[in-house]
Image 1 (cartoon, one colour):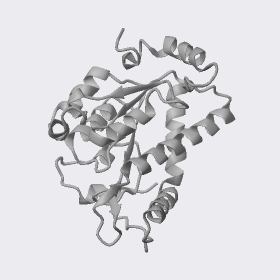
Image 2: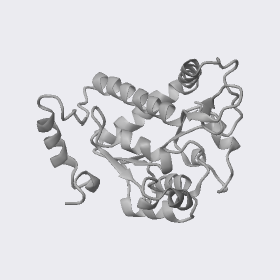
Image 3: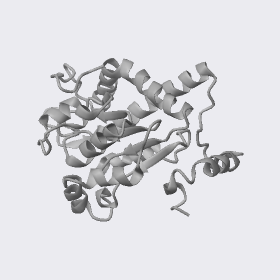
Image 4: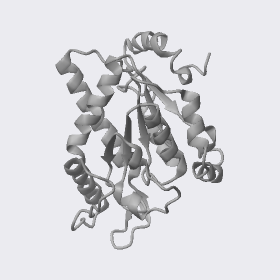
Length: 256
């Protein structure tokens, strides 16, 4: 497992075309995070087998990954999104940046969600240097809830340090997305556009789900997975999962 506290160099000789550079970063992620992917799947399966909940957090554009994990076709039903409305960027982008940097907000959302064993937490943050994701991870760990950090060691080392520790410092397991500093990839000689963090994080999560599926199948465990509502029988499958989890995941029904 790569250690985000130690230097990790960028992939050598990144190609010039954007599609090729993205593919190179995906290959680099596979090489760096391979064993940790399987370990993350093991942590998730242990929680699910014990009837735990997967608490998922992020802020700003990392909330895209919270959406990717929650109420998603093919995704786990035992997922609860953990967030403060202030970190949501679509109705007040400047506020979301400000709130992510405020001390105490992350602690408050964890207190509200009240994760406890056998739950597990997944925290997405490319830089992992703002107070919000760091506090979420630290508070979950303090509650003996294992923390999977999905972050970039390279981006973290180059980011402004707004806390004494990083997200990775409080993680049970780190999935290094290998996102370059500044996130952008194009043009190759002086990158200024085409952010890649969501692509790499989504790929990382998809790999975790694939390994989780294989591990569950090998153990004979039937995972609680959402089915697309656009395929025959999907609504019926999902109705049973809603009945099972709606009182433990109030965000599924707005608390109703």
